[in-house]
Image 1 (tube, rainbow, N blue to C red):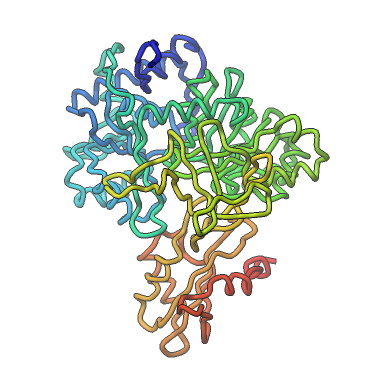
Image 2: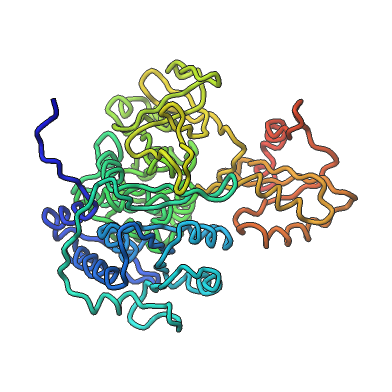
Length: 538
């Protein structure tokens, strides 16, 4: 027997209209790229979203069309989120930090028809546009007339000014695709993950829960994590769903800019990677400042150092909460929420518990498995391959017919332990990926790039702990004949990979250790060079 409830599909446009009906005067505070602060009520924001939806329909955007963005965290980018998905098209957020050829590959692979671009990325787009014939229009996220010349270029505010304030959102199935995010291409080319309206809304509901991020009408929340990175961890949806005041920090993410915004706007929840918070804390220490409004700092991308957890707590009375996930999971998987039991612990014992990645949020099931496929005990000691399943976990990569799951589980590529209370801790990575400042770097791609330089016989790249960036790549090379032109190799790599991928150090060595199967023994090398950057800096 089936239930007898209304079979209504919930769409992202429903979320927007709910926010207007119930929190019309709540604010979205956005820092423009010129530094000015602009404020819109939810009512004003929704009106602009409707106008943009009309623009897109006039440009013949249809259900399923991919519409790309290269933009920072601003109100215009947020408007694109809602307007594009609201008419049944797909908002495709592109990471501008990727190397140019990766961005071109992503835009071509997604077959985007329109590209929204912040003015800070206009030069980049102009350079690659001749190689992107599918892009019909490029919309500069700017004021009237502030755009390059050319028949494909349009101006955002000019387009909106011609549109009425009313728009009838179309209805369609909730499984319709809503957003597309690509992985960072750590193994081969980047892969697309296609979210639906249903998965996006379920993910936002989970994020709002008190035992997850805990977002409500009294929240003043600032996603420092970029909107081009996994939809800013779902905050653009969760904040409006909960009626929270939303702060969008724009492009200025240095310590001084973030401190000013947190203090002036009374931010009480902020989300970002550890590198961002290192800069903020350094600025606050240097100027003897203390944050008074901040209550919760949600940290993902990589683990927060113990010293950071202590400083936020002891100096700023802010609780550091780990959140773990990945692009393939929309991304939220687990959070280390400040439960009464956790807060009752002595400070140092609590800090140790805060180092874990927390417990699975409702809707997400995670398990650890031995290599033979058997589930491992949740005793906090055993560790295995971390696998997940849930309504916001991908089943296939975009434009791939091969399932991304096996036996109903998605393998995260992480090695983890889970204790009897459900707390999960990442033990190691199953692959030799390097995470620097919250972004992935491919050791294999770096090695292959180095092998293209004359005189390099063998190359090995490993991730080494770094006091600021968590990890940085260290390259070890064997030369055909010595000495190798290290400066020339570095210059060569600048034209092969993204600048932030470049190894901090390149060392010429006479030999490299190998395993019995002939593979490079990176475990041995990581142990030998574990303190290399720490010693170098100190």
